[in-house]
Amino acid sequence: MFKSFIVINLIFLFLSGNTVAQNTWGHLANEDFADSVIKSTLFFTGNWRNGVQFYDYNPSNNTGLYTQHPSDSRHLGWSENVAYRNFAVNTIIDAGINVINFSYWGLPGTDNWAYWAPMQTSTQSHDELFDAVLGKPVLVAPFIESFAETNDFDGFSFMDDFPGTSVNPAPQLVELIEDLVNRYIISPDNPSWTEKWARVYDKDEDERYLISIIHVASNKPGVTDQEFAEGFDLVANKVYNDTEIKVGFALDILPPATFAPGSFKATPDNTGPHLLSQSSVLAVQCFIPEIWKGISNETTLIEWKEDFFSGWINSGIPFIHDVNSGYDAHIVFPSSPVYGNNQTWRDLQESLITELGVEALAFNAWNGYTEGIVGVPTLQHIDTTYLWVCNLFGGTCGENPSSVITWSDNQNFIIFPNPAQDYIRIIFPKNVTDIINLSVCSITNQLMISKNITKSKDIDYFELDINNLPCGIYTVSVINQENIYSKKFEVLH
Image 1: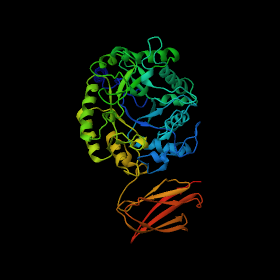
Image 2: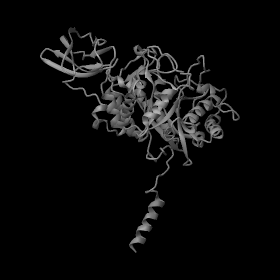
Image 3: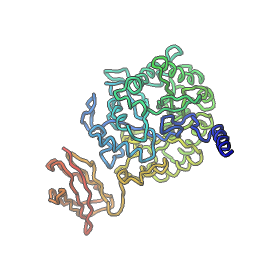
Image 4: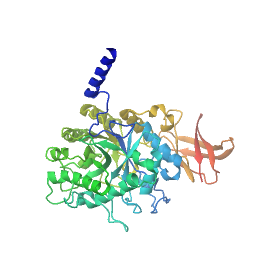
């Protein structure tokens, strides 16, 4: 009798769906992530553009274009060291993120990236990312961007390419997707890579490999809402016919009635019902859409964002809520709005998340140094944004001190970069004014460098030449009146 009772209850639980994965539209389908909501970030793989070549194209130095700088240079030197890649990925994982959307700007060997790109990204760096996430609780997915023409490639504009025709849908987009599919699913250099590509359930409960697309609109004359929406299934079906791989899309829908480009822009009322019927549409995942308003008033931006997000949430399509630290690209885009990176903006976003009740989140972007959208701890904001993201995403960074740079009264200067090669920069708080002694000692406490400097309120940092220091670990001490503050740094030549 007791066994029969257990069997009956198990059947009831099975039928009610309480003991099995729901295969929920828009949720992750990979093993160990089954039916989890997406918590992602956009990430620029690759090495910092400090003039040192790591990939096919020799990059210029664009560090002068950064509006925010990471306080730990391991976030910059992606390709310099396997340990740096592990450090960067572990920092993301500790923040509670389960999908890394890697920026994809072209086919192998083309290295199509703009002069202002925060990192020199490359298809080779994508291989490095797949290697870096193996054995770790995080997945990856491509984030397809438009890119300029080069000597080796025609360039790509989603708006000019999409939707194409029913016979030949978005041919450039198909080419880019099939490149990724061939390299990471059909013929990967490492067979383990395939399982690390995020798969997501579609509306029919089938699994599809996730592809995010930025700036989704069209310049095709006379395109209709239905034609635009059906273009996504036509592209996915073309890829499937060519490769037997099912892909699906998270769409950064550009907002109408703004400065956003595109002659056709989708709306939830008119285009939404058609997108809702497309099996390849996995989610709407906007990328800082409020920048297209062209204003900097944070309250107005949040109110607009609430209206825009509510429309797409009510469309019935799974929605991934955009979260960002703020925006400041005035160095590379002088006319851009500048907002956020303050407690008011963070509080407004938290309130919006609570009000809209969306669980899936995307932090945009993790290392967008030139546009001031940064999740990593920075010289400008220390670990404030990082800990905020960790709280929103349910991460464990507070339990892992290696991921966090703590700012307190006995740590009133920062060393950058660290590790370093030619120099270190000692960054002081603006309110410190005095004669300061800087001393550098070896691990055996041998004095290597000693300098006196006068710190005024207009001096933010002092640059110290370390070319004569052998490789190793050193301690730099700052003596200010009766206080002594010390930090360790590493020299790599």
